[in-house]
Amino acid sequence: MKREGVRIVSVTAYDFSFARLLDKAGVDLLLVGDSLGMVIQGHATTLPVTLEQMIYHTAAVVRGASRAMVVCDMPFGVCHGGGVATMDAAVRVLKETGCQAVKLEGGVYMADTIRFLCAHQVPVLGHVGLTPQSVHALGGFKVQGRGADAERILADAVAVAEAGAFAVVLEGIPVSLAQRITERLDIPTIGIGAGRWCDGQVLVMHDLLGLYEAVVPRFVKRYLPENTVPQAVGRFVEEVRSGQFPAAEHGYVDSLVAGA
Image (cartoon, rainbow, N blue to C red):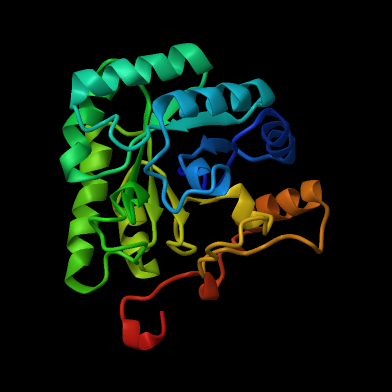
């Protein structure tokens, strides 16, 4: 899809019914995100989510998907023990859920673990920029990669790609940086709060449908109540494919002074 210039559409999913709806609407990649800790369980962060909970929800999503790829987030703490420990958890995920890949947050420091998994036939989706599992280390849910920090995020993305990830999520970074990374990497970039130049876009389903009121980031566009749920998802798919979403107002710029 990257080579052919076809934008990748991804939405988070957490259960059978919505997975089936999203799949029928044409979503390419269903991400079972640890965001479920916030939008399903009501926590303030994703940190409390356990591996067992991720397995439970991912198995339900797999049963609802007939064509979309299903990827399971590896929750906080699971990947901090290095390659072997992460491999054990990833094997559980793949065997017990039937999903096709796992997602790991982190760049340079996570590259060796990603490389270990890929060498042992576990497909990995990377995630750099604003990584929600590092919310406390980052000082909150803040845009990353502004100014001199851009080189750090670029290095993270390159490290993830070189380690063998098949794609990388770019979250909460300036549009110009996401464009640099997308042009630099051979693998697809999937943006969330990273602007229009990424190879694809992902949104949390509850944000897309306007079901989560606790936090509404500027990069979110709501597709309800103007449409039914199937129409809303279909509209999102169409707008990502055509490049209509995200628009300029959904992205961040390099300078705070510029109004990001």
